[in-house]
Image (spheres, rainbow, N blue to C red):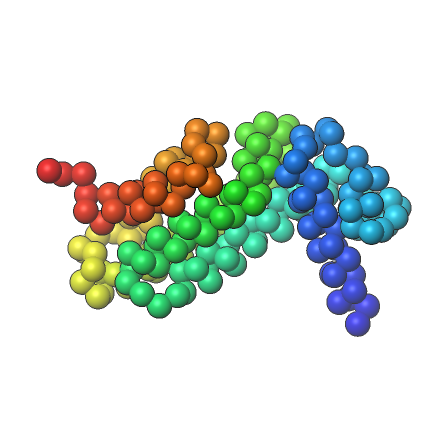
Length: 193
């Protein structure tokens, strides 16, 4: 019971921090604001996270884990491999729209903090590529996708949609689903005439 309450409080703090980091830059968010948003005392926040930097690191991990969970759920839906891959891309759009602050921090926060997470993040990237690769393998078995190296295809597909759906370059809410459909069509139809 105590462990469940501890985890619930931890998640409550992370969710509150996420909402605040969504709208403000790292240095603008104060621990007192996070405490207020989580309906807790400032000291309680420090009981769970020794610093704002550590809280953000844990928020990054929490958000990444959530991204993978939601991608698995999206990719597990019934349908063709094309429909399932498109569902994963739509999940990406929804997630990045909701957690757009993560992109900013990945590229702008002190690089040493992110470097400490490198091997952990690599493992999560591999989990995501395996998920996409499994869908591609199933598509190959069904005859929906020609025989190919599914790991390479997963990396190409993922790299394509990540580059095309860069929230710094396009309005994801306005153009995201259209571009996602085009990237998925390009993957399935190729670029040849």
